[in-house]
Length: 465
Image (cartoon, rainbow, N blue to C red; front, side, top):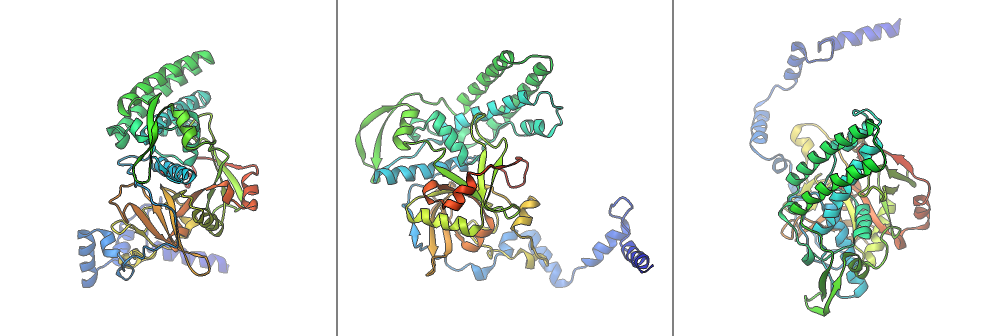
């Protein structure tokens, strides 16, 4: 009886808001909402200010806008800052920044900047093949099946992870920037991507139709090859023709030529500058507080080549990730890393800190979700890869702040770099690629265990752009 009275009281209370029976906003409910938001004089002035100004300018925490401390107790060698322009290739720029730093350390003087356009050409062709083969493999499923929709929704894209750098470079090699410079469409990818995607969707429908009419095996392979030939032509026109042979002479850190020019193929150049298979030389770690730590996960279909490696990572607490990062940086190694870079970022200063902005006070509310809740609700996730280059440690060896090389040009932020506080790093850092020699035994054992398979629709598994 008491329970029934409680429910009746609750219903009478809620009926005051009088929403429509199907959950819509009724006139009475709207009046309640408006009553809650009647403006005082001060509040009206605030409304006018917010309407006329950038939100970040009004929410900026000026107590946190003091001069930046740019000293780092552990810092790798500086190198030229790259610029991905209007493209989503941050993963490639960051991966190549790591490779050229490793080459410099190995040779103790020589420098190189790799052609992103070259590897991007093969990335786009391989992704096109992955899409078309995926359509063939799922031809018996209805077109509104989740997996079929996955291929049609995003036939091709700019984004990726370090796994793509490893698979593509091992298969196609590398070339210096001089051998294949950027084109307009490699710097500005949206229009070419739109056209290639449209053609792939058209081809996907044709392959489904062929398969459903009984075509299989060689017939489908021939059809797919003809389709990829057209995609190759579109990439030739927009990105350029990948060189098969070129000559190149290395330079030292002063820009002086060292030795004579030599003739290379992309694969022989890869052997010269990398010298070993990338796959198997590193692990990828992630901080995902939604999932069990010290477990390995594999993201199905998250790869750049059909016959390549799915993105696989071991999930770790931030303390473990930070210790590996510190060890590698102390050895002079730059690291591929990725973040939700837009959160609490002061773009003018190139400074990321959880206290940069006070949005809650501006809007009279709070933004209280933790990292796991932000991931689960698509509010946060990895969006951008950058190259981890430095850390500042306190007397106990704990991180105070970090620095990354970005790929937004040398005039952005801190001379092309971004400084982030440790409290921001822990909230918005997600992925780190760690060379095997800096991986503790416990972590390596976890990484080598059978992975839990997860689907690419998961909110955290978006490619870095």
